[in-house]
Image 1 (cartoon, rainbow, N blue to C red):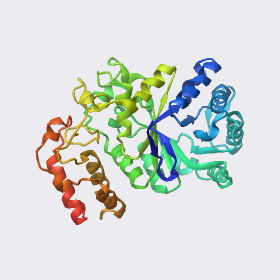
Image 2: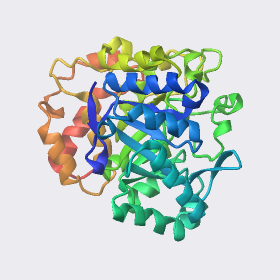
Image 3: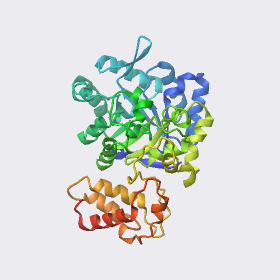
Image 4: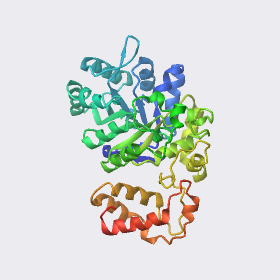
Length: 387
């Protein structure tokens, strides 16, 4: 298992995480064993947004005896009222639910305390500030929450949260289908066939900018919905008309700027194995780019780098995807930030070493003019003024 630094938290989280929302569908002993099995393979981060007692009890028993080896994403505002999930900003209800979370998980602290489910701009502006946020900050001041995060499906909210300085990490929904869509708080329509029949043109610029802002501000991302509930595994249900594998979906997420861990949902040990297989997969198995570019309902724009790594190997040994990522981060600023410049300098090989062979361009599924881009990168990092 490989581990990545989760933004400002400095926590080293497993690239493959555990999204706990399906645990209640199985007998308790079976789900407890599933958590322990994932941990035996190196998984060390688990999300618990679920307020129901069964899910929380399962996680508590699954991590018992090794609590310190897990990073828990626990949500504030996810409550269980009248036998069902309810999101609320009512402080007393939040307090009851959060104390229940601690009790059932058998812990006195949560590693990643999540401002739960903020998708509407008015909720960010008026629902979060006030007594609710005061309670969250009280928990953080006491050390009951070690690091502060936020969960959202809306890239506008994610960007605002990253720029605010309030949160250290964000739980965000990431997959190649969602990334095509402009911001919306209507998740049910993110897979509506008629929407994908429209003239979509590559990764939505608001989403692309959000990823870059998160990396720029060192706000780490954990990913939910990487498989879109399994729909991306089924050619008939996928908006692309082609089936992807778990490894391909995971690699898509992990190529996005700022992403540290992909939180997959599991029904069985076999599904855990399918996700963890990412760590031993070769580049051909990870290759989502060829699948998407040849899909019958392909919607990805030509000329846009997705950092997929399909350009490897480079005869000059340039890490083309990383150079492109640093370029995209740099041009967001009037001057190249010193942190990005230093990251670029630390690379073993640089854009000005490009020999113009264009072998990478022949392999690029999205038609990126890599040779020209390397010239732009070399000029940018030599001069420092984005163009």
